[in-house]
Length: 477
Image (cartoon, rainbow, N blue to C red; front, side, top):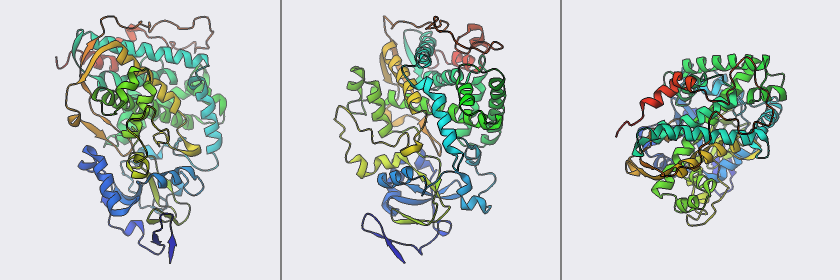
């Protein structure tokens, strides 16, 4: 029995099942160093949808732009939710599968079923104060991000007005940590260890499971504090919008926010810096000099999206997709990086145009687009803008093709970003990290905890993150 597909080809509905096919391992050395070559090889062999081995588990990888849109925009045909995974319900997914810990956290980006609409509505409500530029909270957050960026740049500058720095370790990764701690309302520097564990989970290494346990315990403790004494922070707003959330459920949602506003934003900052100072993006440097930081970032997420593979969806029934038949319950991973390289998409992106397309899939598509995309974009844009305002000169300390990359099943970013820098002779206006940017506006602060919007130098010195950053000053000079 055959079924016609959109491109005029045909697929055999009685063909081989995923679990019986010859599978090419996805996460190889080639994938870490040159993933574009892996995507192209798979596309040549299988077309827009390829069967792959994902750390010992069979899965479909969607490489085509049109097929990616089809999956992302049709929640009924391609639902989320691990309960839809046939192999998992049949006990065929190893209990020690490295990706298990991060996928078992049933937060808003993974969850399916009838509880999702109410949860997503609550997320939108809780994020609105931070994403609506007219809201006082959004204005305070932007001011705080600027202050944190200046603080980190000041640390780099302690080694001298010129020198060598790792902008990944010394800026791009810690900046979103500081922002995430503020959003979550962590007291003092308690968010440091939580984010470090978040990185371990996202990298899917051997210590991912214990790291997840520690992280969820810390977030559950924070959730209990917010339930007892709400503040002006994301956990409190989410509880107000969805009061039926249990502490465990709230901790899982905080896990998602921590991941989105930390690793994702850090990678976006680093990738944007590389594109701008290397000139890879064609009009990126011109865009930045014209004050169009957002446009530069938009070019970056088309060429090097931080989130390269979305969490899986599952076929609701046997469905033709590309040149394959996806059986009911098969896992389907959409690759935004591969879809952006599809000639159907890439062939319509003109590198020399002033404004690039917004049709990319970096934040997903359809009703389940990332709820924190505006927040993440704002933090990254402020960070990148501050770097190029405070440094009069930045250049890569390595050839662009020798920069060290790290790849996980979800994310792709730089292990380090070595640069030679020169601080501007007259730096931009400093924003005091201890100042309340809008003191006339009353704020509801947890009276039992230090205000997380303020930076206490003594706390900074005791912070494990700050001790680490201080130890990096002048390294490589």
